[in-house]
Amino acid sequence: MPSKSELIHYRLQAMLREHNWSDLEYLGVRPDSIGIDQHWYRIGEAEVSVDSIEELDNVEPVDPD
Image (cartoon, rainbow, N blue to C red; front, side):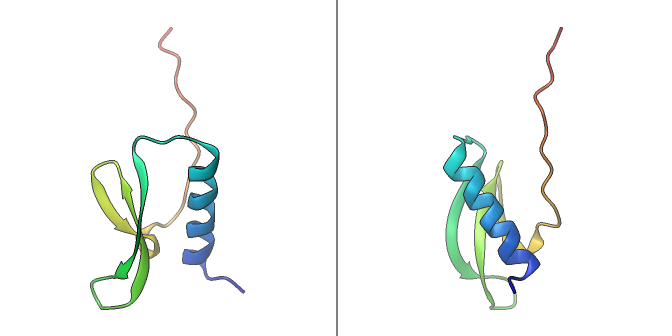
């Protein structure tokens, strides 16, 4: 059974395949602060390991009208 981190990684990969996100980029696998290999993403200007992401929410664009 996949871990929560793996499920979030799979969901992010699906999002990247389906959409062109300027503020989301997959950076690959590298060690985290305690030396465990994790998938890393750039979200906005921050580099985040997938195990640090607690949840994903869809945010609908707000119409300025």
